[in-house]
Image (cartoon, rainbow, N blue to C red; front, side, top):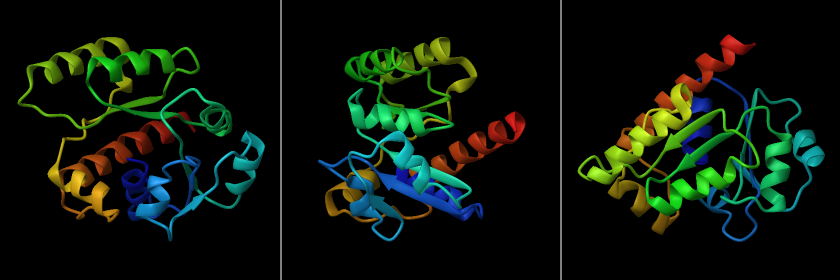
Length: 177
């Protein structure tokens, strides 16, 4: 999701620094090695210093409350949190809220055919209100891109939805400036 968000920001004309702090998987760096720099284990100050000169810095970190994620949160002006809709995903999101309250919550891998996903989306709206973004649909294109470590087609449903998420973020960012 960090890749799609960074690409949407680039498409909008922003200068983007993208940092992948996940030393184990480094998925974003694998997908977009020309955009994402792999930098696991950096402190918040080191991450901030890497942001100098860019309009926007996207820091992709592992979905946890490990020190690497805490450093990314401390370095961030905005925390955007993707979440799946399973019971485990929602519990992890609630655990994450003990560390910080995300500015935007991005529902991902949404399958509108599943009643559970509709119920989970309603619960997220109750918990986070306006902080919920456009859901990113489940897609065979995403699964293929993950397996083959390649980008998504620009017109794939997830890429289009992420551009809408970026627009929502950009609007809120301008309102708060």
